[in-house]
Length: 510
Image 1 (tube, rainbow, N blue to C red):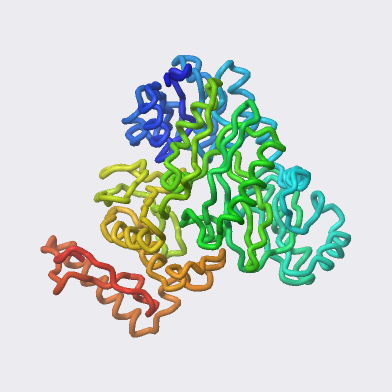
Image 2 (cartoon, rainbow, N blue to C red):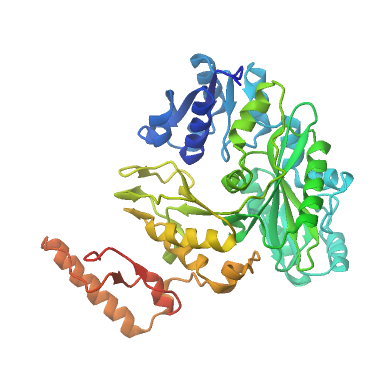
């Protein structure tokens, strides 16, 4: 079906901008990329039908510059704006400005964004909709001593959360009453810095839960469906790093109950478009509402693979206002999909960002492999933005088959010039507890040590490394040939902690 939308401006960058461009191309819709000065040669700029520079590298001068983005949309004749995720994707003010400019906002109504962005209000709405809620405060913490009494009745540990927050910012786990006041103070300070709102609330902290979320689609006429679940329990600092679908703990009955709760939540807030309702699942398979993400999720490809639904195309269809027929997913989930977020970060240095130029980029290919990326060989990773390089998504007939596919794809994935998290993912997918499906949110903290390698080395090892570094620097200065190695492996830097395997490398390369 030819949609009435003819030209979409994508108010984002990187792999999500590329993903939206591809969906537009498939539907015969023109795409408009916007870019900062540092992104002039970015992949999304090269791929779009039109591209316009919107400002300096700093996000507030480019990708967060609402006025400039809307100005460009008008000038270039765009019909609609797709926000991707991050930046302005969950900004109700921006959604309102887009609509006030006479453009189509490819997302939920501003009111739904506002209501779900306020975590206290969202809890109240979900409670009215019948979704299970974690015991906690009914509003922002005012009187800290009174709130402490209520929290004590609920039982420690307690988690303090930012009312306007998400993604782990403004969040503190409180293990005893002695830490109550200091934790609130710290959480308020972080919330103020991240969201401009210091308000916080409390919830009972669910120990060793699984993070399971439900993808939903809803149109303007009140039709809403669930597209089943994703498990996102492999997290670092409350940030997801590996996602999969289906979850190993969700059976048909639990899937239906969670799906029904997610659809009820969408209907309760007047939701339109693609959204995600997130839950925590405890060891007894009880589930509790966590939050609702009013945008396309980073991990949407795993749902696409096991349902056969193009979620971006569905977003465009729903936003266009034409009659929408919900996709039939009665067959789903079909097979098993796993996604690995590949970041330009250095796991050996506490995951610090690793900006620079990509000198080698060889993405895996073959059956059951999908790579969503915004880079190429020679692309620059700037310091100003999220350091995601690519998303590797694999599919198999079942979970074991998907894991096997993931192992092979990760071995094939080669990126040089910047540090990446590829090696980290290789270790996780081979961990016996991951293979068993024992993936609670504390998985990384429980099984991996990311303290600096030097903290775990004795003096002899440090001296040996210093000598090796000096020899390497001398050889490089003299422009000698690369050192030869025997066999087809070199020791991965991961091996310094004594637990992680050597990683395969091409013969003759150090």
